[in-house]
Length: 440
Ligand code: ATP
Image 1: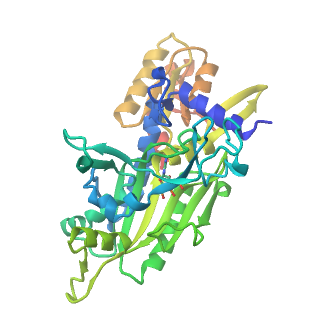
Image 2: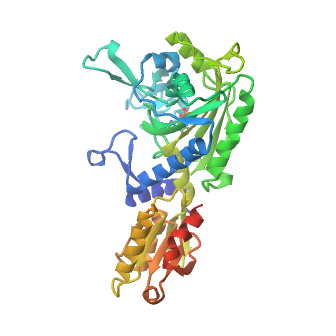
Image 3: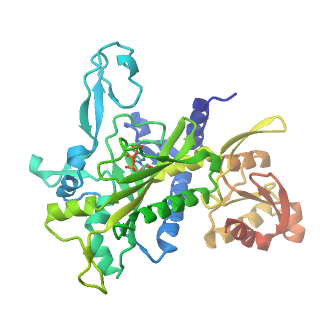
């Protein structure tokens, strides 16, 4: 019986072997919990972002896109409360000098979880999670800037810019995909908690009083979105924040959790942030961030914000963990990533059965036709057909198109389905429409 640690170990090693995820600067021994995405990883990442952008921006009239900068005026982080309060309690072991989150549960009974020393842990002190750097040539306190720990603030400070430029009216939203940085005390679980990561965040500006309704709406929309990517419904659930879990800005918050091999954990948050952020930015900047009703000009309001915030890497880990399967096929273990075709990095592999009788050339033509139609296809003529199928199963490629002897006489190919292993023959000029139909 494979344990859950085994499953994570296997997933991590598959990710490296197939080019999904590499440890960053690996030849130098890596660096604290930062990862690089390889050829397949970058495609999965793009597909996750594309699915989000389509659902949140392209399919709707009431959400606009934005790409704000990572480096912002440091006042932003004073106004948002991050300078004063974006901290975790940290304890240090007096013996091995390792640091842990005091609220993580791993330091129970005053014992260091790494070296085992008893009663050597320091009192908790607050540790700010923002990365600091300096802007310009002078490295003094006046030049301190932060790497943003969330994209949301870029949407708040641009609230009026976006609304006016796009001629939007409340209710409307601003969507962003971008990098964020947090100097996490205890990162880990592969790409689950990293110090550099990407977020997909949407801030929906609404009239106060309608916020509860919009909150419910976005909560169900976001659950629908993740379920639409084929994630096992029984491994998804909501977790409502109790009063003592709520962030300083939040009136109400739900996490969407996934049952990872290491337990139920959040991968998306839906937050009712009230008018906290906009009001604070008004206060700190001295600029009005109000919505003026276009019909009744006397009606002015500072909108409430319903936020949906999800990590790209965490969503990738949800997809990968959910897709990973080991099956017994005729006495052999088959490892397969059953990724939703929308997410699969490569949609089809085109394989000549043998490397002769014109098969490679014929297969290459099909492969090139798929590529020029915009479908990511992979040509592979190396090794036995069984081994080539296995490689594609591990990579998560939904369909394998095989050119064989019969192709050369009647222009048909076999299509092998990654999940059911069923094979069917179709005309070689139908391959593109076959895949397109199933993708939609
Ligand atoms: P956590 O409690 O796990 O630290 P959070 O509640 O602080 O997360 P938010 O600030 O709501 O998270 O961020 C929204 C989303 O961004 C999270 O649900 C997660 O998907 C992603 N995220 C946050 N921190 C990290 C991180 N260190 N590494 C990877 N993804 C992250």
